[in-house]
Length: 513
Image (cartoon, rainbow, N blue to C red; front, top):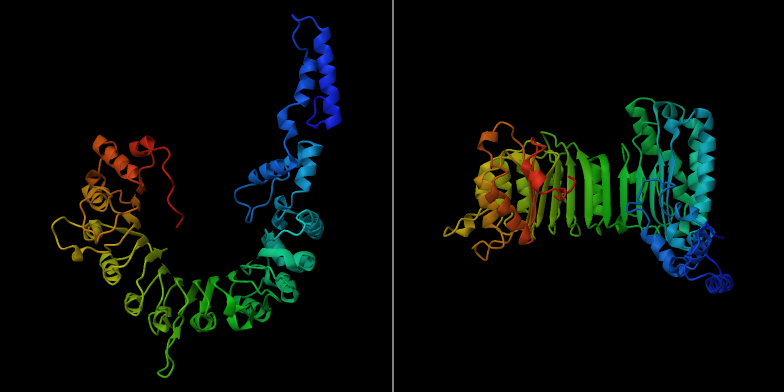
């Protein structure tokens, strides 16, 4: 038993203590413990006597922080703790929470075609064994296929095996699945249509369409005729769909019961209006819309009173009504505009809101005229959060900076609490803006305290005008604002090794755009 991680039983521990006591009584006082005696004492260590319930909880805390869609590794829990000793392995195998997440990866791109089906069948067997240890726990399942040009061209070789894998998992554990992610060609998801998933709350389906090696029109025909959906899923409220040529009318999803929906590939404006009219419980909707349409005189815009967060991506056409012209979302609180926008449509949409808009983001728009952003912000004095990855100059900061003894009504966004912007340069105007909205400023009660500021300085042509990062007064100011509780991140896009970055090595990273 010595030299192992085995835990002695109560009887064995009593025998070891009795034996050690005899050794102590028979050995001279001047003789220290031998190596064998120390090994026996180690067997009685309190660490070996940890209660199984406590040990199981420790194992749960050792699980990887991100278990969403990455494969488990042998040097991570739960596989690692099963390799220590038989006692730990027994505790791990009897702890359902260690096994209720599984990420099945089919690395076909790295395998020879002859082994594709064998690999999928092995993954099917292993996943069933893994999930059997979860017992009655709610399950979180992800299946990801890593494809190549060869596997796409020869998709008929492995489609049946991948479809059977999905079918087996759904047949045996469909009632326990709470989250399901399928990064597979749409034909492999057909078992979903016959499944019974009463606990399913979130469904993610991703298919880029590369498996169909013909023209885009042919792919559109196939993907629009292959049904997409789920059989029984009374609790499903969140869907993320990334497939080309999605036809909303052909899907079999409980749209009327959804609260969160994300559609990452382009859909037509007509499909978007169908969604908005159908999904009257939606809280969050993010979608990619292409094209425009002519609104008929007798048909009004699609109205949805439940949406609080709306993300609209895509490039509006130069003629016809855009998505923002064709919808009414009167109770909106957060708006995300991505890729491009039509200024007239955006201004008109903001004027039609009935409740104060609290958050506005412009994403993937690298060039936005400063005067256009000012026009937008003038319509939403209620704004608390502002994000943009366009690059602005000092004019915007000046309008966002409250000035003492001046009319506060002229300040843009007086309630602003969080801002993430790209600026041309760092200079005194940045200091004035942050200081005027800091906790210790003598601002009006109508101007909110800035709690979060993530500012990136972009221009390499204005370095001679920029603030000296290494100046003691500047560093002291930054320390003061952070000491007041402000989440302050200042970075220079062009200077990787500034003294500022050396002074503050623990700088938190900005949120991912």
